[in-house]
Image 1 (cartoon, rainbow, N blue to C red):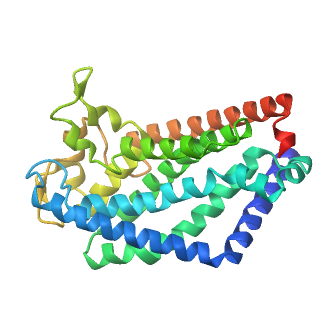
Image 2 (spheres, rainbow, N blue to C red):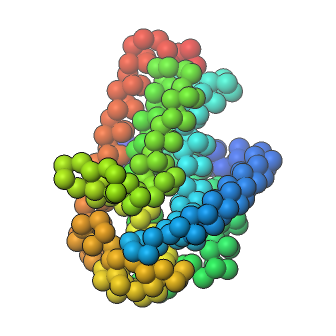
Length: 309
């Protein structure tokens, strides 16, 4: 119990340290806000072209329900990952890695602390740049229940992405130059989650094990979260989540979530069986990631690479 309390106290200290550093470098936040604004603008322009060819059936992948929601989702997750994956390398450049390690700050605590601090920073960017155009267009959860649902699926993806970030970042304990590897990894996660290309568009040409690719990718927690958010943000009523057959807030008809992806989702709430499954998968994955990062820490100490930091 004392050990757990000590770990939590050190984690709190790491988070505060990162937040203080982030506030000192205010220009970086301005850059991130500018980058997000440009990203939203580009996605809106692409969304206009997508909107012109939107399918009359299936999920309404229009400018609002695909691109702006996807941009909002990955403003946080992609930005947080990019801010965190260089945590070890940055500590090396500052010459503080050895000091932290000798003061019982494990690489896992360092990475998780940076991840949480970066989340707080990017959430500010999300609410300043991405949420306002969604609200302006009327694309937001239509009830308190749906707001709770969107928060739940967001947390699931956040937990899972913490595990992904732990793996990518901890690799730099062994190999110092991992920038390209991390960028490729982030891109793959974005692509597989439908943040770049709608996974529904794969169905006509790609089938695996007799099922459309989207029906398999939907079991990837970030994909599930992103697709869930699209439905939650675009449906006019909660009953449309399961039943479909209505028009979205963009005026496009669509099937129900379960019909399209072959699931048994109910309301995306705490009683939803798919939510339970995704949450369990995400927690297990994070635990595996922590073990993996711990193993790399031991290897780096054995090889002597961690002392070079």
